[in-house]
Amino acid sequence: MPSSQRKASAMLVRRGGACLIDLGVAGLLGGAAASALGAALTAAGASDGVIEPARRLILLAAYGAYCVLLTAGARRATLGQRWLDLELAGPGGGRPSLAQAFGQWLAFVAAALPLGAGLLLALGPDRRPFQDRICDSRVAERSGAAARPA
Figure: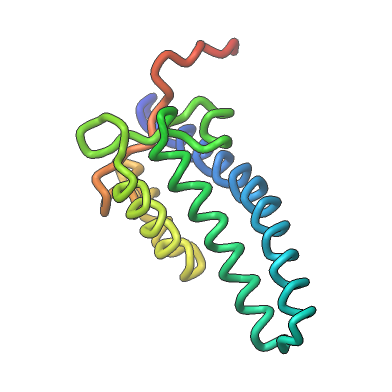
């Protein structure tokens, strides 16, 4: 395997790791909010048919807010991306706008929902997943990241 393909494959592994970290962090935040909402709705006498969908929406909203606000922020990265020295670059290579970060997250969710089928596009020659193609964005090594020892 050529060096460029190895590097692109390693980047996909790092992106996947960052995504798992972010799901954990957002799950903790969203889980706390969803539990509080569930308790409030239960106290108000709401049925499970109302409580469970509301809790799922809160979890999704927490994940969305976490990803969008952090990637559109000054550091251009979620906590998982920062930990793995990655950042999101917008179409011009700079910081993405709030709308661009939201579009990138929405495209990621759309790609991941049908059993991750849209994420398989990352296996193509340029190793860019669906959300990067749609939003003309790219996740790259963080500028100024210290080199890690081998």
